[in-house]
Image 1 (cartoon, rainbow, N blue to C red):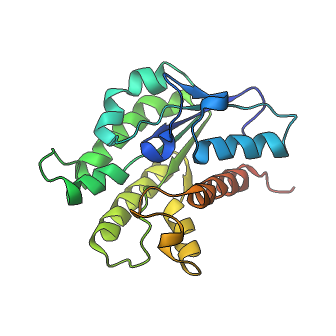
Image 2: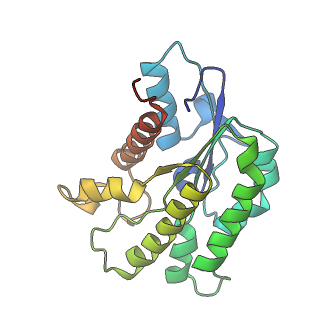
Length: 216
C-alpha cells in the first residue's frame, strides 16, 4: 500500500510532532521545525511529481488522554487518507517528574490508544504507529525501561490494526552505538535537528519499505 499523489497524511502527537507548527492545523510552511517538516521536504525533493498533502496537529505536552479529548477535531474531522501517531513520551515522563497529576499507566495508555484506533482505522487507507522513545542507551535506566513497555504496546497494536510500525527507539539506539546522547539533546527527550532527522529517516525508510510490492 503506497501513499499516492493527491492523498493526505496527518501527523499527530506531542511536542516532538508539534515543534511550533501552525494553528489550528500545521501545513505547508507551518509544519513546525521537526521531523514532520523534514519528511515533507524529503518527499517533495525526491518525488516532485507526487504531491502529498502533509498536515500536523501535534500539541506539546500531550499524553494519550489529551489526544483522546481532541481526537474528533484534530483527527476525525480532518479525515486524512493516512494517519501517523506518536504519543507516550509524556505519559511516561510525568510518572518521573510530576507525581501530582493523574497518571496514564500502561493499562490506561493501551485502553485509550486502542479506543482511538478502533474509531479510526476503517476510515483510513493507511496507518502508521511510531514508538515513544527515551534517548538513553542504558536499557536498565528506570525511565528507559518504562518507555520500552509503552513501545511494546505500540508494536502490538500495530500488528492488531494492520499498521506500519516505526521503531524510533531502535533508530536512536543505533545512533547511540557510535555517538553520545549529548550530541542529540540535553533532556533525553527533545532532540536537535540531527535527532529529528533520525526520526524522519526511520519513518521514510520504514514506510517506503512496507509499501514496496514484491516482484512477480
